[in-house]
Amino acid sequence: MTGPLDTLITGGEVLLPDGPCRADLGLADGRVAGVYAPGTGPDAVEVIDAAGKTLLPGIVDIHFHVRAPAYPERGTVQSETRAAAAGGVTTLFEMPISKPCCSTPEELAQRRDHFAQNAFMDFGLYAAPGDLTVASRDAMMALGCIAWKIFTTAPPPGRADEFDGLAFPDEADQLRALTLLAGTGLPVVVHAESAQLLEHFEAEASRLDPADAATHGASRPAVCESVAVAKLLAMNMTAQAKLHIAHVTSAETVDVLRAFAGTSDFTAETCPQYLFTTEEDVARAGVYAKVNPPIRHQADQDALWQAIEDGVINYVTTDHAPFSHAEKQAAEGNFPAAPPGVPGIEFILPAMLDAVARGRLSLGRAHDLVCANGARRYGLFPWKGALLPGSCADVTIVDLTDETALSAETLHTHAREVAHLFEGRRLQGKVCRTIVRGKTVFEDGRITGTAGGGSFVTPRAEK
Ligand SMILES: [Zn+2]
Image (cartoon, rainbow, N blue to C red; front, side, top):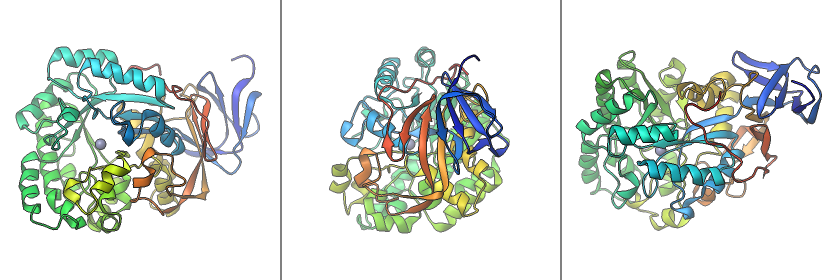
């Protein structure tokens, strides 16, 4: 290239695919221009001093919910992508739950345009397979959906619109969906809990104290998840989809994943709420900690960490799902009535960095879990998920020695007042700056990006 770089980030450690390395990083035209030995980089218009800091490829969260443009009271594309920027995230993949559900080409096109005008960072959009026709599938593919999502559960009461074309409680429909979507080569992400077992356990739990946190766990015990996952993995031996199991929570499901290893192309994720909290935190935070599937026991958390160590689970995603304070508050003391979801987009990276500081895993492995592996699975690596010449200039600068304290005052999510599950935690590791396509969108606690500054990421995006 000729002329100076746009940006040179000097003095830091850069996380490269084979580990952290002292280097200067050059950015130009929204891409990584080069990785240079310290002090040897070319001239640049802007020089960022990152002495003592670590440069990570910007985090890619493959499981995120805003539901926009519906339900602005729960958070908007602007508010939640600002929060994502504060969390060090540079690319997020939005799930199709909305009103109406993102299960038609028309709705997908509308959401794409809405996100393009409002997102502070790059975004991909999931589609639900809707009417399970080839025509609808191909139209959504042509629009550039990043992947597919289905639920094996029935729509929650009163929320049929949001799950129309997304929820397939019938096993024949699940097999039809997997088979139809296998032909696209895109990941098929499944929320796996057995609809029939849920019906049974919810009826049983209706006799328990609705204010008791244990009631929620009893209404959706681990067997609901493990049975649904086992059936999906057996089905996928026939369907041959590129299957991805969402938010694994339990030791039983980890055993199922192990038992089916090698039988088809499948991967699995878990989330910070399952890795860093247990039922005791749910008892403390009440309905604000209600998520589906539920947060379980210490033994389950231990099994999830073991699965990460063994390579059985290779993805950690947020399942960020904000609800309004009014909605959660109205259901205080009533777990069955409370809406399920927690806002985790500002927790995930500091929590993983804290786990690194505690010696639980290496920085490289932590980053693979929250970024590079997702970029690989969705066909975007090394354009996303790496800092190599030609990669997208998405950079998250962190201080591994500084601390993050999460509170309603410091959080950017619109759901900051319902973030009781993670509130009060002090984590070692702090997001200092977030750069999307070469532009700083977050710096030292302040949002500096602009609405509409992000780009639509498709499976065939320029790489
Ligand atoms: Zn989700």
